[in-house]
Length: 294
Image 1 (cartoon, helix red, strand yellow):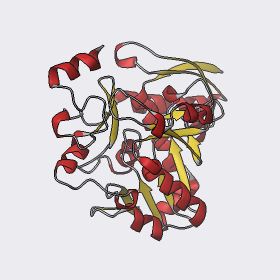
Image 2 (spheres, helix red, strand yellow; image 1 turned 90 degrees about the horizontal axis):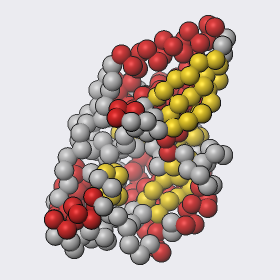
Image 3 (cartoon, helix red, strand yellow; image 1 turned 90 degrees about the vertical axis):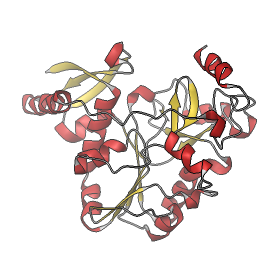
Image 4 (tube, helix red, strand yellow; image 1 turned 180 degrees about the vertical axis):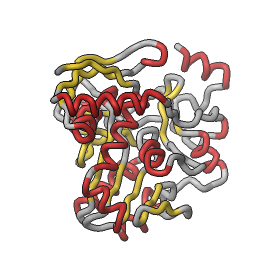
């Protein structure tokens, strides 16, 4: 039996999140270990699937919006208060689950990485994935930001590094080649803050794999894109035994009957932004809007 399904980016993120939670080693970490989640529009849904809600505060740091590479207003506001982390180890906004319970206090990344070890899990959303399932993450600071520190620590300390990423972010060339084309130090001008792309080693999970984890069906991406609410959608051909296909349709029905969205982004204020490397930083508001809208 073969069926075709259409998943919006949010629906794909929910399916990926459900699959991550079902993994046996994730279940074990939730039971007696530590799970650290970097806030993002993808990992937001992991907390939603676990708790039915997400704590208030920073749920995303870097964003792509209005045609520009930017940071969230919540992160920007911290910069105006002088609270921007001076080093990736000082990043205090991770969601931390210890034995399945969400810790509400802020804990710096360096402290968390020191505590983590075999059996623990770190989860970070990605910005790109290639046909070989190599993932890439954008970074906006010298040295690769938090992701570089996490990758080094995972190799050294033996915890798992899970990388959820939707197939909407599939790029046409290998991640390594793309990274060479976007070296952070060589960018002369950018629509927004300049960024680099870093290849990231870890366990990449896309929605086709997630469907297999959750239902036993095989899913293959056959197309992408759409209009209106289906912008960025992924079209998949799904095959499997009748029982597994019924399980797949139940999954699709579950995520379709109630659309879950990330919170609306607050408007940023470029005049207050600490990212003075941004190409728009010295433009007045009217000129900036005209530039972004081109």
